[in-house]
Length: 295
Image 1 (cartoon, helix red, strand yellow):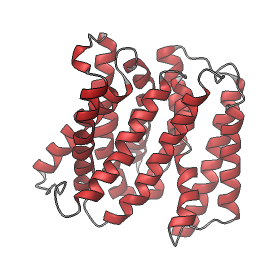
Image 2: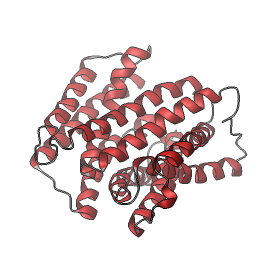
Image 3: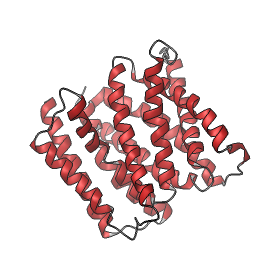
């Protein structure tokens, strides 16, 4: 790992923008496609750049090796379930709310890590960060202008989607000695296999005549935030380490809120800003505790 340079901060900002851009594009995709179709197209198009890179670097894909059940399980929990839940939820709530709700992943992972890993136990700083962050989310649910009885369940499903990412991350520790590109390619393959029968029986997307903007958004979601962004993440992790890369957690909800306003004219209330601030502060204290521990 090296000391971060301007190019590293630039790549980190680009990665944050890419992942933040997923939320308003999911919203646009829901104009024409159902949540299962969006999930399927994301993993299908997302697999293309990852598998091409593996082919170029001669990295063996182990999707059907003796560890196939781990790849299948992680593919379902880390891709199929959250992609479906987020798409289903975003159809009824603003994309900026989804960006803020999904940003709780570092907080949820800290809670889960306390119970399922040996080296990720709570301390005073982490506990304070978790309490501040989730207080912001609870406060966000009190915003009756944006979350009401009609879309309350949708917002909860997005939170559930973020929890799936956390559980998938814990399961990935079981195969952590394998190359990142191999793991990502393998779980994308299994996610695609799982979703083919589901999308065929539930939504039959071939019968849909999609809007142009929805089609562009769903292709973008697959290739850029799902495929290219993961490859960019690998580069940042390799060059600068986990602590540096984890700073995207602060930027994604901020960029997601800004992009939702620019492209969809979404409402930004005072409660949204307060919640966003609380979540970022919570993530800061959790990351600070992790940073001190690694140092």
